[in-house]
Image (cartoon, rainbow, N blue to C red):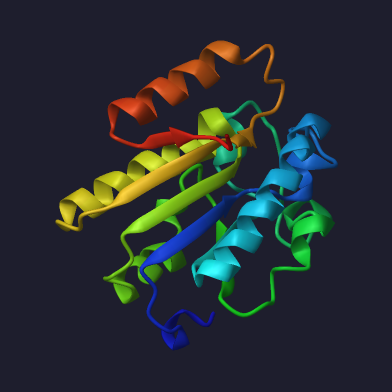
Amino acid sequence: MKINNLKMYDKCLIVVDMVNGFVREGVLHDKKIGNTINRQIELIKDAKKEGKLIVFIKDTHTNDSVEFERFGNTKHCVRGDNEAELVDELKIYEEQEDTISIEKNSTSFMEAPYFRKLMEKQPNMNEFDIVGCCTDICVVNGAIALANYLDQNNRKHIIRVHEDAIATYAEDERKDYVDAAKLLMKQQGIQLVKKQ
């Protein structure tokens, strides 16, 4: 992990769980999530021009992850499997300058030890843009937890979730959850934005 050697940043783009296990294959994948990739690439390119840190969050579990039981034996994104890898369209950015990848074993990137360490090492980072999946699980859990962490540490911040760059699996059937997630984020002062 290159967290200890990063230069200082004040802005960050967080790309949540755009891995094969949600976009291309596996029990929780939905090809419609791939419809957000082009917008995500635009935002990645913009972030690179602006000198933002780009953080790829990758859902990565062990074979015995307790999360699988909690969500009805939905074994997915196991470390070492293709499901836990970024989709090809985004993988080309993974090893570039101003970019890091962090694995998580929960539905909140804020609980990933390396993400928390990143936040400690980057005390000036106060502007965050979030894209990815799943809107009603990992995006909302990560965004709200990030806001809470920043509040707890008295760090003024702006958090934006890009509505045109997020999605969830079986979104039509899960519309109530997606709407609730967006409402909760708004209630927490998180900005929901989209390209004009």
